[in-house]
Length: 281
Ligand code: AMP
Image 1: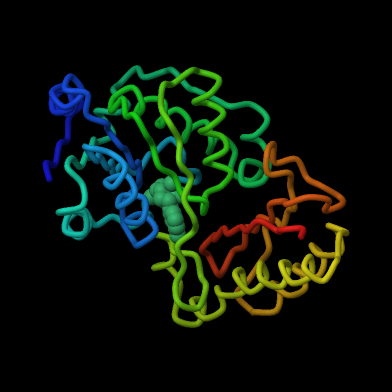
Image 2: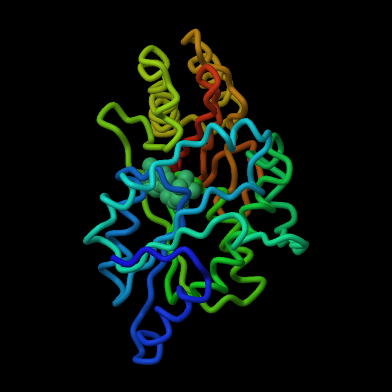
């Protein structure tokens, strides 16, 4: 695995394989890697000739700045995990990505203002801007995202489609801990007690699946039951519980087809998200 820090050598490294018609698979990440990330890397490796992973903690998608400072970073461990799995690890610094005078932002309207976008103003514009840059730098044939950040995946897919980026997108299932907690780089911030209580998100998703399985179709009833359930552990504060159309993330009152249930919950100071598809038989 080659570790490359600058844009020009990264482009050069991919020039040869591209000219020979090799397929390039790309997994963008912010590092502090876990099995969720590695599931994407393994898929990218399996489906392409060259596998590229990027690690870049993108400052323009963080607000407040505290969260950026607190974001876990461990490049040594990440490189160890990726060795043998990917061919090129791209780790640009902030100066490479945003040199002085940088002034262009890419924004997907509508989808970026709801759910996580409602409480994290400007967050998704930061995500789509860095993603547009990474797509131009790496120019992959295929790019891989996790269902864990389903709104982010939907927004990036809209950007890719509206701006005609020639890349195929795959969104892969959420990888979970044994007790069901979705793997996340932020989980390491949880105290032992918060870690135990954090399983409430997964349990809430499961109880919603059971309600829909038992014939409940009223979204408000499900959301209210989940709100009560999630509020039980002392450390948990609901930010949102939404049931939305899978295609456009518009909130629904009645469940008539397969829909998406999304949660954002603070466990102590740590903000966690999770989601599931509620299936109507
Ligand atoms: P991040 O490093 O948090 O920006 O995540 C990089 C990619 O990994 C994104 O596409 C995430 O959706 C994906 N990802 C993060 N956590 C998981 C997980 N538990 N299961 C599957 N994919 C994940």
